Image (cartoon, rainbow, N blue to C red; front, side, top):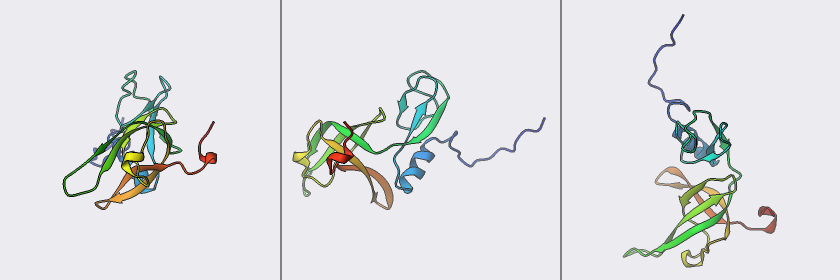
Length: 138
């Protein structure tokens, strides 16, 4: 039996966050889905936090979600900004911010769409209000 040579290169299996980062670089929001319990998983991990299975596959989100919670932060010397928890339609929640609207105007229940922006030279998933009724599934 031949044993494969050891490598220090991370793979999607050994470093699940790699698929997420590569997705953002490509303008996509990726998450994992557990084939064993049929649940979405986010942040990337090696084992499903719901059932403990290793059967996680990478999927690409459509990027539509709903604001679950929001707050406005006021820092000295800069304008207000918001922090929001977004429930994505695929069944996972992530923390981000909603841009394109005053931070005080972000409301719980608002429909939003993901946008990938550059922050300090790195891609970052943020959200913007979903623009039209056609973007919001019924």
